[in-house]
Length: 54
Image (cartoon, rainbow, N blue to C red; front, side):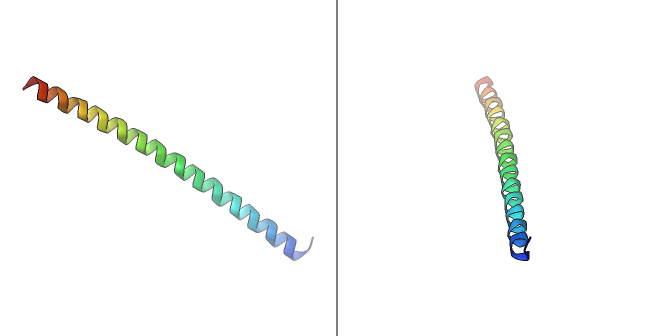
């Protein structure tokens, strides 16, 4: 194998690894946003109940 083809193979491996890591990061951020949204909604519901009671 020539050195140029092995270095391009290495580059493509690095690239695919970076793409995978970015996908994982996006998935993690979506999960965090979903749980934040749920927390916010339950907080808003509690506030509604408090206002209704008073």
